Image (cartoon, rainbow, N blue to C red; front, top):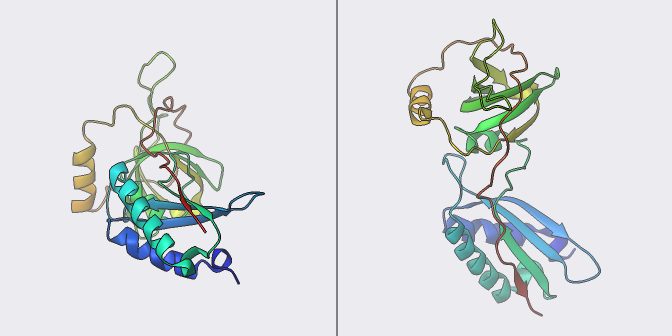
Length: 220
C-alpha cells in the first residue's frame, strides 16, 4: 500500500508539526488526476478556541510541513506531490461535535430533522445539546425582523436533531456577544423550549477569512 493510500505517517507527521504551531489537522483530501497528485490538508484551531486561525501561522505551518515531507519519503512517497495547507471554508457544513464547538459565538443557519429552519447564534455546546439564541435578522429594507408570536428566543437543540448546519458570515457581530458567551459559560443556559418556528430570512453573506495558502510541490 502506498503512502498516499495509507496516510498513517502523513497524519502523524502533520499532527506533530501542526501542534507546534497551535493548529490541529481537520481533514486530509487526496486528489488524483492525469498529473501530479494533490494532497490537501485542512487545518484549524483546537476546538476549545474561538475565532479563526491566523493566516501567517498557517503559512508557517505549511512551510514546516513541506520541509518534513521533503526530508522523509515515508510521509508521502518518493514521487512528486502537490501539498496544500488550508483552513476550512466558510461554506463547510458542520457535521461533527467539534465543528460546533469551534463555532461557538457564530451565527448559524440550521435545519432540523423535522424540516424546521432556524437562524440562531450558537452560545454553547453542552454535551450533546446546542444552546442557541434565535436572531431573525432583517428584511430586504434593513428593518429588524421579529420572532413569531409565542416563539422562544433561547432554545436547546439536541445535536441528533440537526440535519444541516452552516455558519453565516456577519459584517457586524452583536455588541453583546462577549457578555452572552460569558453568561453561558459562567452559568447554565436559561431554560428554553426545544421547539421553534422558521425565524425568517437571513442576512446577506459577506467575505470570509478562510483562505487557501500557496501550495508546495514535493519534487522527486
